[in-house]
Image (tube, rainbow, N blue to C red; front, side):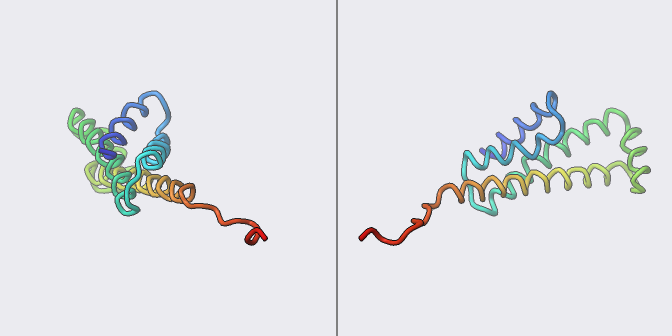
Length: 121
């Protein structure tokens, strides 16, 4: 469920807010709705990488690869499809580490703090 929340919310928010919202959404979702540590990373990774890959492929498809192939040449990549994969990987890593950070911050706040002084006498 976290995967779909991250994917939909980040896709919608990127219309109105700059691209870096992909770091905020997985952090907040995986802070709010807990998962395991590995699950937090992979949920954040997939929740960002899949929509970026799908939207990039859609743009590549409707333009017959004209724009993505030109941008790929700038980055010295052989074709636009490889550019889409690299873009999804970078976005996925941002989302994955952001989700993992949200999980870790939740773990910090869950733990009971140690008393500052010794036992009461």
